[in-house]
Image (tube, rainbow, N blue to C red):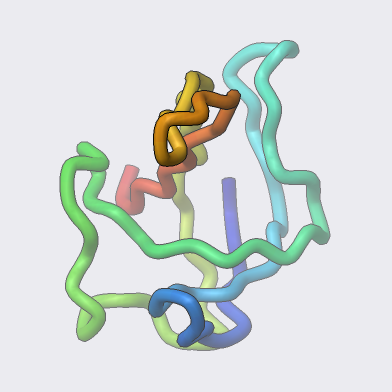
Length: 93
């Protein structure tokens, strides 16, 4: 998806805020953010194994391409399991 960076968020964790400009879904059943939606995310490496250093984050006004990946599962939540979604925003593809 293509996202225009609009600013940063500091609470609860440092993140970027951006508006989704375009989306290319891999499959019809894939859930993706929709065009125009504002998302907050911490950018990850292309292999989504680590966070990108803040000094390398895109600046407000820049447009970036990234993937949106998610894993649906069950989180333990202090011993009380319930469904959850882990979201990843790898940059540089």
